Image (cartoon, rainbow, N blue to C red; front, side):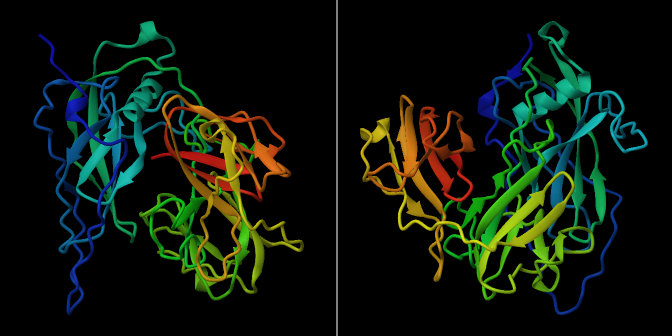
Length: 393
């Protein structure tokens, strides 16, 4: 009888972990260049993992032998055929179905949790399955890890094989990949990881060209910055593997962290409003100083079916550091049956913002009510761009 490993054997929805820090030493350690490292086989690897009824696949590994305890970033790669190189055309694009895929998320600890739905999506892309009748009942799945140091040194683990039960799901375009502002002039200035209090997202450009598979594309943010308070842009709050900074702190010389290191904190030359444009597809970042300042509001309200359309429910400004000019607001909402809502400045309802999309969208003046699904959310609203995003708590 087949054994399906269900959700009780899985936990989490992404790769998480605590960064392992390099040991403090009186002398510089000698760096080994290991050829490989150990990915442990799960205790139940001989069973069949049911991807549709599971949250995540959990794996552990041993850190590569660098000669010292290093800060390592791990990425998971999967294949249906144990082939680890894709055929590319002259432009570097994959020819046909990919032979292997690397999952988007990563871990900075030796314990990794891979989203079961992301694995299933990759299996569909590698197998080229376009209809439910094409899906195999089970399929072998080969897994290995890629370990990378900040210096760029990379090595790969051994490969382990397991068996999974995939399921058919219509492949839809990925949501825009978000990047977040963090720093002394963002939120409470703590450089923390809490969305709304220490970091908040840049806005996808409405109508922008986003990659259907990765969600990468154009992002923007407009806000107030001062030359004495630095900040950076990161992909994952609380993680530093993917970040943008400035060479010598300059906004005119932005640098994405790569094999040669990372940039310092961005600092604007003079106080004022700046628009930041980041294209995560082309890795281009640009700052533009605004000649005209956007309108500032002393408060922001939220009104909807959840509070009887009252006009006294205050949102909280995200920027609370000294000297801030708030334009990003947050509110925590819990609804069991769903609701509708809008953002407004005061009881005159002039101005107010709404739209018909959820969990994110771009509010427009006197737009429709925003339909909110049942759940617990922290909504972030930017009164300059109209961008709103409901983050599931």
